[in-house]
Image (tube, rainbow, N blue to C red; front, side, top):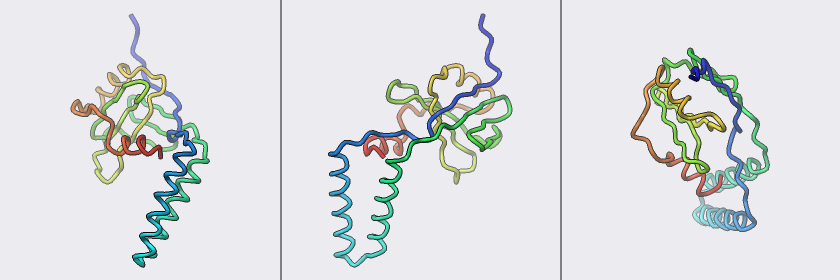
Length: 158
């Protein structure tokens, strides 16, 4: 009989790195140019500055390699990088495990202002992680699909 782990530890990339084709860059450039033309023809210079800023952020982000983030889940808390999240501050979790599309643990906070955490499970056994977390926070059994924000980023590859 296998004993249950007392803690889990693994590393995951800070963000998902998408491979962009020349067609993606051309499409993004045309879309950006169209928005810029609209903003300038409408006299909305703040919108034009925001479009340029957003395009530059995407471009720089695209040429950045993700760092590896260390995750630890023990009987007291979750540690992700340098941040510690006590279980008492966490509302619920759910696991979306549909390889190769998604192998993620999602965490929502009791404080609704904090954004939802998406933690790639990498090679961790989702059933063992789930059983361990069930002892500390409740599971959201109604979540079965990728969150809209994840679907959007996968679709646009950003």
